[in-house]
Length: 176
Length: 317
Image (tube, rainbow over all chains, first blue to last red; front, side, top):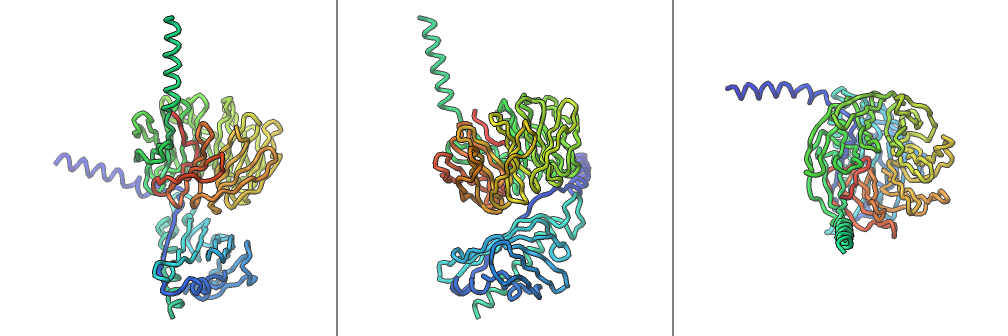
């Protein structure tokens, strides 16, 4: 009896510490999908930096200078009208990969800060492809004690959902 | 004769102790709330110590008996005893601890608080905070001067480095550097301080006598931390978003090599002999071992989840 009371008291004591404890911690997401199509075909779908409007459902528009040169900016417009600027860092057709980052955070578009990402295509053992899409980022609220919609979990969930939706669409387009 | 014998024994023990010195790396694992203990002579993990939440910064004491770790998520500093590799204490330090450094005599530990814009000074004998020093916005890096009179602090959100006088507990000089200064390294011989500027992909080289930047060297994307090698007269800089390490020759201030390492390289430190440089790759949870003679990665060691090791994390004992 006594022991259980002590445990409960101890538990209550810990609770506020757990709910209020937050610091700046980088998060990561890695998503992969296998596709029954050759890497060249899959790369053809995603290689252009602005192709994202074709394969990521919430993106309705993508503006850029049309090249894939390092440092170019793409401006995405989302279904909810929010805009997001992303900068291309590297584009390597020989490795079928590119790397980019969010140029200026807009937490109304995606609840993340300091987001950097890369997407790549490789061949798998059965002659098809694997796409890997991954990123490192911070939550949308960079100070202590974030509101729930801008905390670590919200950031990871948002990016995971975007990647799942994008990869599923690429798969569908490639396997048509 | 007796004396000779004693000398022989002394020499023997001295040689034996040199030959058997093991080099140990203490690596913070942000994702597993732990510190991995690596045997760097045999390239393997030998222990794992649970610390606070999301550990990031780390420093080993000059006498090699203690390791101090910042835990941003639990707002604390963990103290590890290196004789037993056990956690001996967690000290609450407040909001945003990240960078951590120790005084040359081992008496004080300095912790930068990202949110409150202060340096907390911890008395290591009593493991308690004895002073706080107001610095610039979001202090991100600390280096203690070997003479013990000042520390250098990089203020990420002010684009400055401060020279902080420890006696008065106040910044005495503020030096403008590049955009978002973070990790730093010091050369006593050159009287220079090196600062990684995350957002403009460069390293600022500060002349500590002139107290200003004399050269800015371009490196890769998001440079994060720096190690200085005395013998080679080189800097090794982790480029977080390039998955590379830039090697800068300090004679000409140019990049002599860019070495591919793991993904999101962060913390960097050297073997006491300077034969190897070790890089913690956050995304991979690995340590890349760079052979400083060939400037190539010679090994990769698996550590925990989200390795950061931001600070000095290597001891030989």
